[in-house]
Amino acid sequence: MRLIYHPDQKDISLAGVLYALGDPVRLEIVQRLARSGALPCCALSGPVAKSTLSHHFKVLREAGVLFCHKEGTQHINSLRREDLDALFPGLLEAVLNATHAYGSKANAETQLA
Image (tube, rainbow, N blue to C red):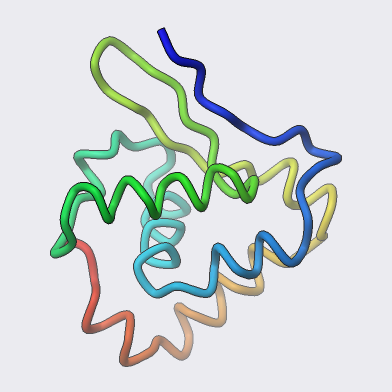
């Protein structure tokens, strides 16, 4: 079985987190996880190809934004809130509040089902 890579907390960088959150599809994934808690990949599918969605999950995971573990055949994703809040206090909450309050045309166009 192949292990799923997750960076140690000390290896999470602000630039990597901001890059990961800079894409509308990835931002929508983070917003959905913030609202719902842990979700399987299939619950976060949308109007993008599965391979593209897998890429977005990989970027978020390798940036240290998501934690993914397997349960049977499902990959369950959750936010790494504690790690992000320890490194960058208030960043995740500020991004989520800003996107919720102001929204964006890109989010409306790429919103996940």
